[in-house]
Length: 543
Ligand code: NA7
Image (cartoon, rainbow, N blue to C red; front, side, top):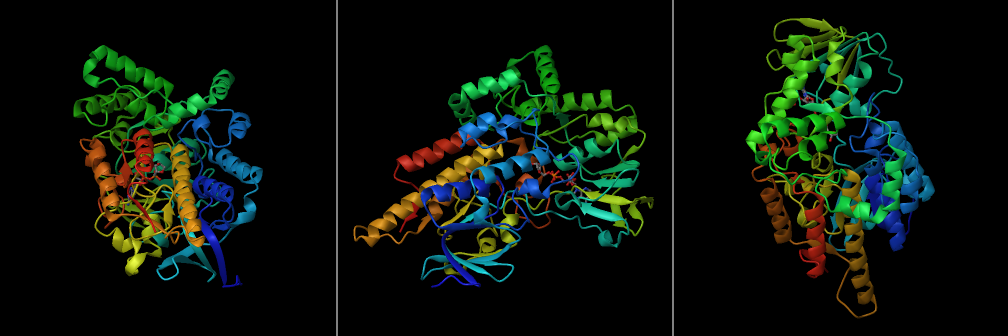
């Protein structure tokens, strides 16, 4: 078949150009394959292209929110503080793309609409919204884990005459200064928005349905000495990160809550509070905060006490106080609770007084009150993980779509492959490790490349008459079930499973309740991969 205006034939296609897509492009070129990358957005960056809301930042420390594959760049690319804001991350990703001359492979403003595996030719036919078709042997989805925004189902939402904006599709020219602003959502995003805009807007009304435990981020300058130390121990440092559970660069506690006296517990949490970072707070003091109800209750109570110390208005403090387990994705913010001491920042308890409608002028609640606004910000989250896939027409063997495959439970082989979907790979697919994303992405892209390389090698043997391989690889259904079982075992006893959040799919009506992460984290994940390869690529069938 000839390449044409309507059809392009390649070895591989990458979908998405965030962290995952960029590294996949870099790696495919290294393998010597002929490939392209399609990107829905107008430029690179993925999550960091779209999420331009005020205050958007990563809550991983700066030296771990980057690639480690390019040691020289790792050691030299500048950053000043211990966290990176969106614009800095986006510039960094643009820099990596330029440095490695990857832009020429990426076709922007190109949204994948469908991908169909043709069993006769063992090719994927990928259709872009323009009608253009890519015919490829390998399809690598790097669409991110949080890229499909969720809009709340509130009557009249689109009747609002002022500005209505979701944080994931922010309007760059939106000027909120002196405006009356409503904010719906108090997850990680809502917290970041609050800390940035509270001092700038005329008024900020936070509609809070489910307050969360927010610890300080501890934003500060990154000490040059620490950077030098990390750089001069680069390999050992990254080895440790890759051998940790969440890859956040802190020493994960091995100490049980029960082993500490009440005074020690208080001291431990006080120090964690002063140091900052959500994952550190949850995992750096004791090893059983997410599993032991007593330990969890202590940590939760510690945060509740802080809220009441910081927030002067008792009614605001009451609405901001969570009462469920401290077992959602840990959140941190820069002086979050302090913002509520401003006279222009208000809270509306929408648990006891739900939102009933959005009107042309503002928001009405069950008590019949209508509050008027100039802008409504929706920080209402994402249809995470499988939500990125099930909205598309992705069809594998025997006509089965990915939506069919995941209609009862959301499973995968190591978060990267699905049985019945040959030569289809995901970066950060469902059941990936629950950990800092850049190291997970590097691990998964390297796994995907190793699988492709083996498949290519076996395929080449065929053409010279030495083997029987058509260059097709997929996991067995048993291997996928085995990984799903490991994910279930890994979350057993965790209070996360008892707490409603996007992690198990609870934030989208009708979404299957499923264990969407591998909770034991990065180290056991890497060990699993290493042992599968050692045992002759256990779980994968190369045909
Ligand atoms: P999250 O964590 O899913 O938070 C969404 C928030 O929106 C959460 O507070 C929800 O309350 C709230 N929400 C959603 N719909 C409504 C309605 N109808 N009324 C009131 N409140 C509502 O999304 P984020 O973007 O903050 O964070 C997602 C991840 O991105 C984060 O974990 C990081 O990994 C990066 P609820 O809790 O459902 O009561």
